Length: 599
Image (cartoon, rainbow, N blue to C red):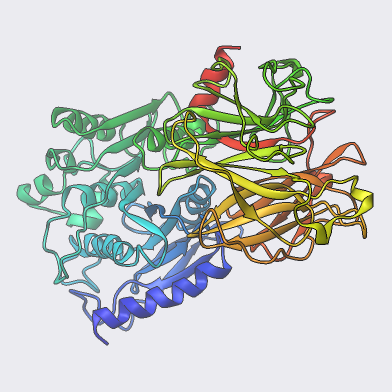
């Protein structure tokens, strides 16, 4: 089997795997033919057992593998990290410094690959000094070759190593150009490295003697010691690195990390180091004291260097009562528990429109970095309100946009929403209006003359607007539409406002284009209650629709992975008392902290 076919098969198998799995593992062979190997039938892989008989490490690895832990990131490209467990080049601490690390990385949105690398041995290797490096290089190349199939960013593939695994990771970071086996042209350079209590040097007085002897032999040459003392192999092209170590490490002196850090600094390589007072050696994700914070330090470093996105805070804009006092805001860290901000007082008092109300406030962050808001100003007006802000606290002068002024029969302009089109660099504003005499086939007495359809206009500057057009005619009285992007398509969530026979539920429709045409509306996705004002967010591939259960004077929610099967989670969410029709949006954690500091 040639390498191209092998890669294709691995890729196809893992495409199927990713469609059904999140944060679960699948182990794949690293090599079709292992380079530099010697046949030895008596050398067999085995587990090392602890005092309770539990396997805590692997010995005598003969078949290198990658254990794959992919994250479901809604088909977006994400960061990947190859994990090199430690064990003095004699065993692999596959659980504490392998699978558990993968689970942590998955939790912060990173796909992980636990490398079961061959431990240096003259019994199975022609040159044991390069055996582990061969596996590390091929692991990096394998992940890069399959980046598209695994939804990975090929420019954000890093490596993390613990103890002797840290030596292997730093070797991969400094010896990526070494031709240690016949390979294709795929680069073996990791894009970043995270070295946790790493062995770095082979020099006497600083090295870990067990790791040195296992890798280089009992009497290595000075040239070999120099070559694999990785602090001496750093240059300007060495990947950005974060180092973690404990001062009281008795097995691998902290000078290993310090010297590597100084070498990186000398060559102007972006680097960061955290040295903790205690923790000893082999603390994994942490045992006690300050070193428990190292995973968070690494996460912050990854964010600062743009290897992973910054954590987001979920915001909710809403009104209370009839909308007289204006804009209210709440926030959530998980999308379930929402807390009011500024003691649930108003951030902006309405000033425009016939009735000077601020109902149904919808906020988005636009392509210009500003927050743009539209809202309902009156029950009977022919326009909507608009304002923008840099910080959600200080708002521009409020503007009345007469979007339905041209239609003399317009009764209302309700629940406007705004969406930014990244392709056209335009904003689409859409709302529900009743125009007397239009769509008489769906007019019923019970609706008191209201018979809404969805209309829209577009703008690039909120000064000039396109001619108002019909956006959606579903064949029934419709209000409260909101549009979300799903891959290359768009999903409209809408309320069927029909009163006879009573609907009063949320449905969805689909389109290939933001301005339609949209498909026929689906069956109701909400339950046997009256729901309105849907607003939608996707959290880790999970669609959550929040809505106002207005007859019950409470908020409800449903969720779905596929926009087809829905689960009611109303009993899992909590909103501030009195919350009415609002919109959900995201801001970065740093933006949220800045926002809080100004309150």
